[in-house]
Each structure stands twice: as C-alpha cells, then as structure tokens.
Amino acid sequence: MKNTFFLILAFVTFIGCKQETPTNVVKGEEKSEKINDFAIVIHGGAGTILKKNMSDEKEKAYQNKLTEAIKIGHSILKNGGTSQEAVIKTIQVMEESPLFNAGKGAVFTHEETNELDASFMDGNTLNAGAVAGVTNVKSPIELAVKVMTDSDHVMLSGKGASIFAKEKGLEMVDPSYFYTEKRFQSLQRIKNRNKAQLDHNDKKAAFYDADIKNAKFGTVGCVALDKNGNIAAGTSTGGMTNKRWGRIGDAPIIGSGTYANNKTCGVSSTGWGEYFIRSQVAYDISAQMEYQQKSLKEATKDVIQHKLTKLGGTGGVVALDKSGNMSFEFNTAGMYRASMNAKGDLVVKIYKE
Image 1 (tube, rainbow, N blue to C red):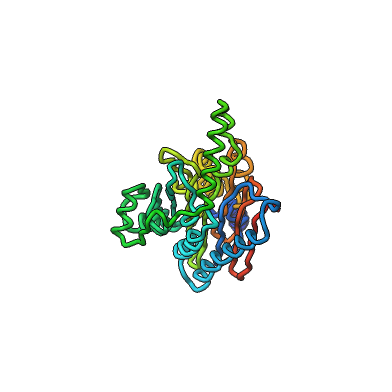
Image 2: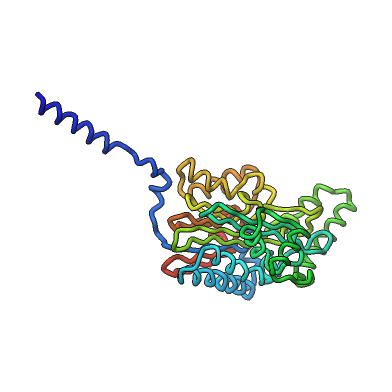
C-alpha cells in the first residue's frame, strides 16, 4: 500500500510539472524565435508616394541614399558597435540629405523658417531624450541623445535646446543651412493656394487642400538591435510644411514617434503627427506585445491598419523586436524604407507592394 501511495504521488507531481507554464514566457515570446543577432530598419517618410509621379532619376536617388544610410548603421552593428551609435549615424546620413524632411531637407514653417524635432530612446534603460523647435543645430538626433545622456531632462525646446547644444559642443549652423529651394517653393505654393481658396470664402477647402495633407508627412527614423540584445530607436523631422504657432508633431514625443524596450521592440513612426500623438502609436505597439502577447507583426498591423486608420490618421512605422523580427506597416501609398539583417541581406523599398 505504502509503495502504491508513493507511486501515485510521484505521477501526480510529474503531471503537474508538465502542465505548468513558465512565468517568464509569454505567448508573444513563443511566437518570436531569435532570427537575427543584430538587425537594422529605417524609414524616410510615408505619404502619397506613387510610381507614376517618380522619375527614374529621383527614385534612384532615394534608393541610393537609403542604402548608404542603412549600410552605415549595419557596419557599426556588425563590428560590435551599439544600437545607439548605429541609430545616430544612420539618421545623420538622412539628416544631411535634402531628399528627406529632416535636417538639411527640412520643410518651412508659415513664417518661412525651419524648426526641427527629434527623439531617441534606449530600450535597455528606457531612458530617452528629445528636442523640439530647434533652428540652428546641425544634427537634431545627436542633440536628442545628448539630452538623454547629459541632462536630467527628457525634452528641451527652442532657444533652450540650442543653448544646451552649444554648451555641449555640438555643431551649430546658421539657420540658412537648412534652406533648400524645393522646400521653400512648396511652402509658397501652399500659401498661394490657401489665399486663393480663402478669397472665395472656402475655408474648409483650404484646410483640406491635397498639398497640405501631403505636407504633413516626412520624417526619418531608425531602429537597431545590437549583438548585446539592446534595442534603440530614433526619429528626426522638419515637421509639417506651413506649420504655425510653434506646432510640434509626434516625432519628438516619446511613445508617439519613438519608443524602445528590450522586452518587446523598438519603433519609429512617420505620418500625420497629431493622430500619432493621440494614438500613442509607438508605445501601443510595444504594449500590445507585452500585455496582449502579440507578435510584432500582429501589433503593428492592429495599430496602423485598424486603430490609427479608424481614427482618421495616416502614416506608418518601422519596427524591430528583440529577436530581430522586422515590420514595415503603413496605410499610405508608399513609405521610403530599408532593412538589413545579420546576414547582410539588404532590402530597399518605396511603394506599397
């Protein structure tokens, strides 16, 4: 009898152990097998980007610049560099190109100035830095990182951000550095069209003018996973063409334009900022992975194609999870984007496919 009792007890214990679910494993993690020791994804803005409106020369220019930028970051990661360094250097390539609405290619405000925003987040520490309304700092993404590493704050704006940048030895430029004729003429066309429509007392038409809608898009961003398993994300932009009253979009808002958490993923957003702020797009993707056990693809699709779209927002994200899985989700006609994995496979795309 005694031996029989112990046999039954051992059997019950065995069954209990087999049925127990480890407390540190969630559904989303089970879906997310490690596929890359390191990886990097980037975007150069989303919007009405159509093949029929793109010359071969212009298309090639975008492809070349996206390739140049992502290869810089990938090389850093491949050689054991940090995700933070990879994100900074990659975004700086795009900030220095007039092709993108960030840095050198920033759009103009209603007052015909350039006001730049940027943010950065470290997925290991959950520390972050951001700047808004900067007018004379060459690299806003570098300044955002400095705010994170060299101050007690998360966000600085305007003149204060510039003073901080100068004190920290960052490269300062005359505001004319950001002038490009193409962006200036875009502003003039929007102003002229608005004036013509308002002269006809059609204020609603002026607000919903197609060019104004398109002018809301344009941002650069990067998410990287390094060999130490750390995720970093960054975003930089010139904001919205014809913006007024010190308008700030989602790019410098942690949780809206940028988010990173080693437990889940890193995200950089691009699109109509007001909707991304209201939806907390970047954080929502991470939260769905952490609390609803969704995969990266499931979370990005739900947030962009369902929640954001239902609200009326347009744009997209690039995202990278802790296992090296990538996602490029957008509800617009196109999004400049590229990726490289640990094997060095390069993918560059522009249009919706």
